[in-house]
Length: 310
Image (tube, rainbow, N blue to C red; front, side, top):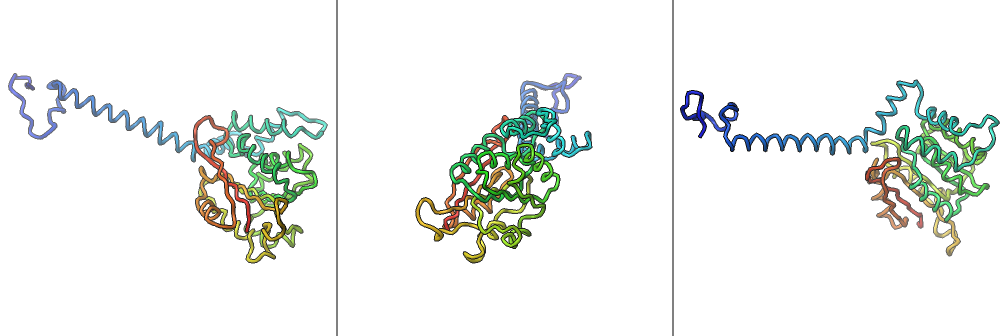
């Protein structure tokens, strides 16, 4: 029984009023307080350790550390990376570096210093396998970030092959050029600072390329435009203006094919692209699911391979 200080029975004037007087608590009131504290703890824990956790890995780490260190050092991430590579792999005589060493050093930087969406070794193995299998002679890379993907492609690419990189961010181009030059492959790569959709319509005339054997589509930020519009430009309106190998060009296993590989189709998301290639009879698709690069957590991401058979 709940009694007030005078010993009289306490009669609440509204439900829950007794909770305002801790000195009058009985077992039921203590249970209600415990339950409220427990629910509050679970809610706060979920907000901080679940919602906050996924926000960080899906969004926050893509720009907050970069902006912080750019402010502190006065240098963009691309320059910080190149300085780190030069420090770890000193090359005063500017000799050709081992491409494996450069790739490993870039991986170390993004896995131990600061996060960067630079493919990593697991996704890089997918690129390695496709380049080894299809042996492309003409490669288009749309969005090279700081150049890691270029090195993965070049390490398995025939020396006679050509690589065209379309990247609107000049800082990324500068970093990629530095890495490519380090490994002595700068003669194979042509860099174009522009948006891909503005370059592709006149690419054949400007760069004397009629078909691409391998196309890599990259995403490095949220809310980026879908790759579908670019893919349609590559397909062309007719077989004559298509940059993708047509099924009628040759017969058999030796027939040339264009392989399109898109990264970050899950984490940064491009559902329109996935719907387009998977629903089209002109593509044979395969999905590669894996964790986000340079993280120890199970943050799901994926790559989509689409072989043009139209």
